[in-house]
Image (cartoon, rainbow, N blue to C red; front, side, top):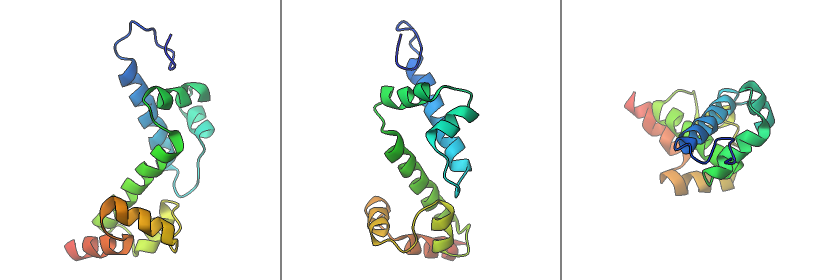
Length: 126
């Protein structure tokens, strides 16, 4: 039996684990800016929390950093699309601190521009 409850002979265990991880992350992203924990997401998916965490582990993912990366990707997509009145409003929606220099530095390392620059590019493209 694998960590996600599939038999060893089942070749699709990675696909099922990936589907469970993505469903969990989708639930949590849909709840933004309200913070949803992994237990609530598992409950909504009608899966045991242990199975959700095991799916992340089986794929070699750390749950919290993976979720934070996905939130940051969603923020960057919203900024590029100009979906919010300001970069700060978008950051608040995705539960990131607008005035945090640490977050801005992480965002710049990941996307090679600040949230404000991404937002300005998105607005200019509209």
